[in-house]
Amino acid sequence: MAGEILDNQGRGEATWGWPPIHPEGRKYGVIAVAISLIPLLLLDWAIVGWPLLFLSIGVFAFFRDPERVVPQSDNAIVAPADGLVTLIQSVEPPQEMQVDDGSGNPGLPAGPVTRISIFMSVFDVHINRAPVAGTIRRLVYVPGKFVNADLDKASEENERQHILIERSDGLAIGFTQIAGLVARRIVPFVKPGDLVAKGQRVGLIRFGSRVDVYLPAGTDPKVLMGQKIIAGETVLAEVGATALIEGIAQ
Image (cartoon, rainbow, N blue to C red; front, top):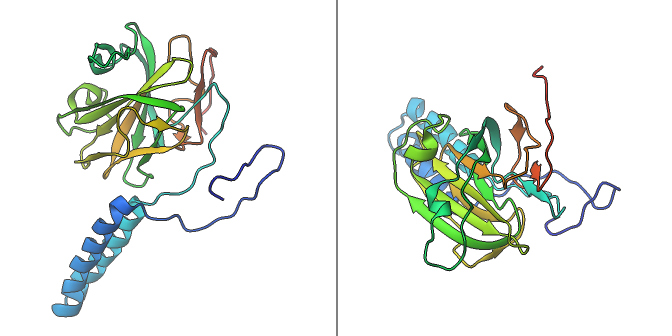
């Protein structure tokens, strides 16, 4: 199915299959299995070994990397992360995305923009994807704390990594990977200067975290507070489209 064109007129085929495990996570799964086998095979501590073995399956599941069908509309900004929309706020973009970094590439302009915060629990897929196609202009790592990623202050206090992508028309879209209570490592798959496709895998955060997306000025979200979204598939917004969208929790 990878690379196949699917559309709303019935082209393409959809089949279910076990999602593969990302290479970044295989070593952790193997280590977890090895640890669980020690009490099972060497110490005959089944009461300890079986729960550890079950936990190792969870480690593999955490690093699952399913395929996604990415909308290709030019104006669509897709979700970079699986999870729950927990905050939608008007804020100033992070300074790291605004200041002149000496590269000659402009950052985000000053002024309020809409930030969408996506909280990823340990049960969500943690592979992050590019919200738009373009060139990676900035990749800025900022060390910090590990407070609950669901809190507003996590955007300024936690370990985080800012990524700025410039589209072919010059429009820049920024998003931030934020470590959480359990997460202790942000892993990038890209570097400045790389060309990325919309929905392409750009990194992951280990064991629970959050991603903030900064929409360009004059663009409203197409998602709601409390909505569950899917990386690479859910359309967060359409560039230049403004509209109030309401929903009812039921």
